[in-house]
Image (cartoon, rainbow, N blue to C red; front, side, top):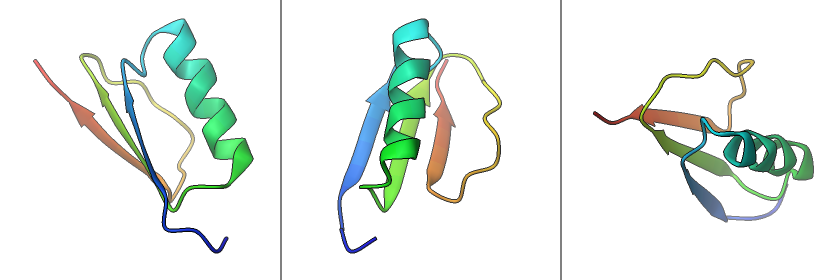
Length: 55
């Protein structure tokens, strides 16, 4: 991976957000993927994911 791109995904706990995160992980074009949502969703450990839960 030779990119400095960072993806920010809001609403990652919904069906569309889950599909988007799965695609971003498999695409491997981002050095970090920041997830922001209202619920905690367990993804398989991935060193590129940074999860934040908001109330």
